[in-house]
Image 1: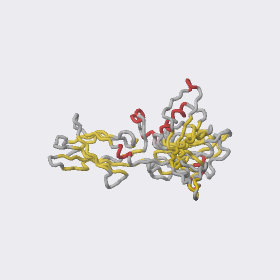
Image 2 (image 1 turned 90 degrees about the vertical axis):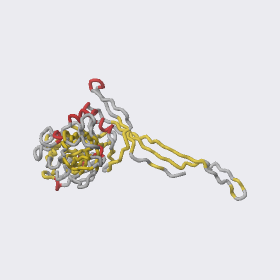
Image 3 (image 1 turned 180 degrees about the horizontal axis):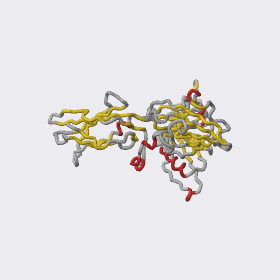
Image 4 (image 1 turned 180 degrees about the vertical axis):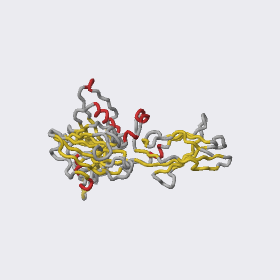
Length: 397
């Protein structure tokens, strides 16, 4: 008995895309033949699931897509606004798995599991468009060179407010050992900090926005002491160069609103990390109010009299639900920012930063997005309407 794995998922695969195995067996001609596919997650001794896959009539091979099984195990890791670590595990955003293949056949069906065991592979909480999936290569995200990417499609230069939280997610497990923060003003370099990254999961996130950076405990700073970001800072860079394994360099420009209140959204990107974007042009709120009323019998008898009063109510409001929708307005956008912010509009997990709290957003109400081009629109902004992830209720009448 022999089962051969002809094709398999990549070593690190986006879990919301296909994760297929193609199999052959020397026993495919046996009566009642099926492949057995046993999936073991995160080193478990007990299998999570067993799939029975019939052979394909066209070529007698077995084709199985396991991503739905793995997808159900993964959730997400939004950054911790209270963390004093420079680097945190995103342990819910990735998993390891092993698939063991067997077969069953016979007039009285007998099972022969674990005939071929695949190597350990990984799934990450990512969902890619078709072309991106076809071209996907996790090595692009392994810290090793100045072109190695963090898990974000944001432009390399972003604006942030001094009050913003934010993080950069990365493929880790010993690859990014340290990272460097360098701050600048108009005269040049203000200071350089080296941040330790003592975490263990396959996906991790490092502090990147001003508040998150200034929360890092001095014990995690290998070079420099707090504060990292001060009122003198005009911009700063983050990369792995100089102290750890090289990565791309990301630049964060400190920008404060001129006359409006700034609003920051934290949202899950399609690579499984969480990005942040600050809307600088204020906000407005709309309240949708749902009411339910009922008729009641008013007791107008007072002693030996029937007394009517205009204060009596024979219609009572017993249910009042208020849903708040907030409209945010961006600053002028570049083409790169506009393309990236489609991920915000599509995102299934969004938070509105309120100080150190993250307020759940139910969804963004936009159902379409037109990709902008400078050659055509010249200047453009993005307005979004947020429906908060909770409702408010009033007293009964």
